[in-house]
Image (cartoon, rainbow, N blue to C red; front, side, top):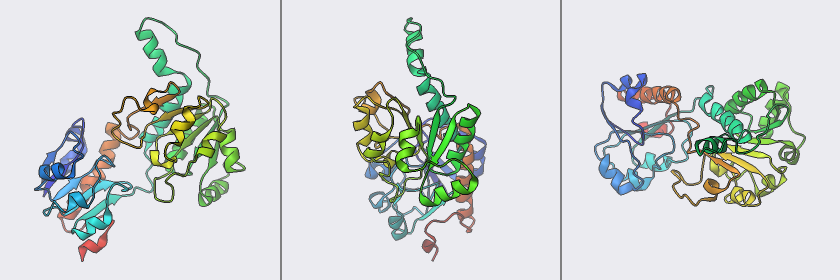
Length: 322
């Protein structure tokens, strides 16, 4: 098959063990991002299969109708960036391994890194010593503080393990079903949503972005957080009501460490989440490790091979097979 891989910005995949799985295919790797559907369609006009890097490229009808040769889109995890109905209408199968039993340890580690970096002012201290100024301020210790994990899932549970090893206390909030699972597991669940936000020194979000979770974190939730508390988001920006975090940050009450943004790539250097001193921003690197890529794309390339063999796996729109 003619396989085009989009958005491999650092040309990483060709150096990983998983890439050998595509040895029987004609593979083109694109190392930049092309957001315009018409120009992208010109690039990948001969593609029979598109391989995606998570949500880096939106796949809609405006692209799909320009790709008559396309038969397969292969990716991993959730797919809010893919118009499934348009895929079906154009005879394109979407395959995505939802990996329900496999947490992203890379994302969990990134969450811990953001917490430590924010509390110990690591970016500011590095900038200070590089400028010949020695110490830049006084950080805070994590041990004994309360970490609130919003979402009772795989990544959050990994974060909890790391946090408890550092001596953090952990409490949870989630959907009603998630709270029921947490109660059954015997872990600490906050008395109420309001108490969760008010009593957590750190709130970390670990929820999948779906229509029902978009904007689930409200301005009122952020306003309930204590002064100097920290909000961490390595999940998806859309979980927070649009503009709510920027507005709360502008009040200089809370801090934030964010790896995700409404617009990605975010290149507006005047954006308040990039300029405010209370915010530690990183460019969506939670899952960006060689190890995580090899794990994820091993699954993705298995999907390509299964489709080529006539036995597709992890099919999201099986009606295309009819």
